[in-house]
Figure 1: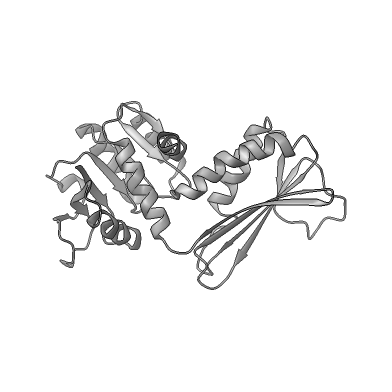
Figure 2: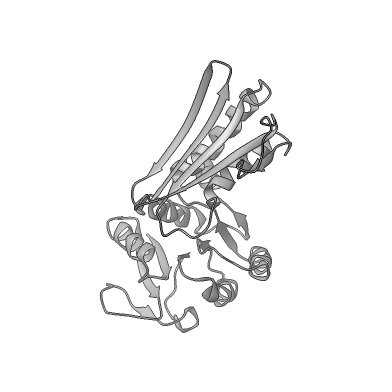
Length: 254
């Protein structure tokens, strides 16, 4: 039985993860961390990670950037691995994450979906064949109208996966409205759509002469990210210190 602390338990993702773990016979949330506690959780809730007195095998974090410093200190001091899902960390915090990974296992990923992370692996294989053959590469991402950043972190991760496979020889283009020139063969176009309640859709297009190959991923609820986070927690429990990502989880499943 994997014992989990849910850091940010009363947020939307915290509650989705709580529901998924409740139905998992191999995992249990033994404590939650959140500034507010309305009594709806079947586990004890502490106002901060520093107040937590419950022992666990791993922490899943979906909180806010301001809470991450104390979380990292707790994980290092108590040798508890952490699945770190909070975004918007400062450069100083990212450096602290790197330093903490030298003392405890930390898994950090731009997207917790198992499907997206399998796609990252598949794109490397596709790029190795289609890039040298002259196929143009475009990425189109779609998200809800409340999303503040563009392009999405996932779209950039998809582009980076392709670019790494191709020796980082490509550059990214986000807007062609001010340009009147032919497309550069070494560019990856990245376009963002914002509207409605779209949870997240990503299309990666390899366009060649008389042929188009498209890789598509659609997320229809937050549960796809929650399921990935739970699988990541199971993977990370008991691992030695180091920085891990979702590709490590995918490799353990394959």
